[in-house]
Image (spheres, rainbow, N blue to C red):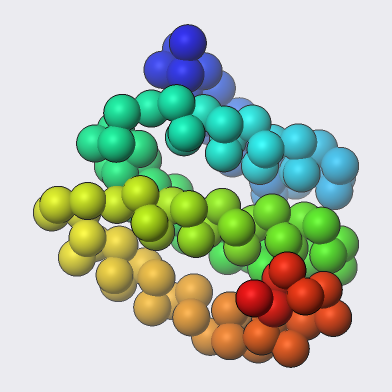
Length: 112
């Protein structure tokens, strides 16, 4: 079922860039659920490909969207295994500065 939904991944990524806040949050929840149902090796490869797509959402004015995007970013980083780790490391480094700025976010779950 999750693999079938991966066909919709490009559409979901488009929504993250152009949809309104409520739709973006729903897309993140769906994406998190899909990733949770994939085999670890599949999830690892997809995480490396898409992790950078979530960086712009860290600065969204909606604290719930920031919380979801930071949480999904964390989950994606943790899902990586094997040879994907080096690829992910480079991409994570690009996300560290935005994450650092959110350490003092008013929403405690984002700051954590």
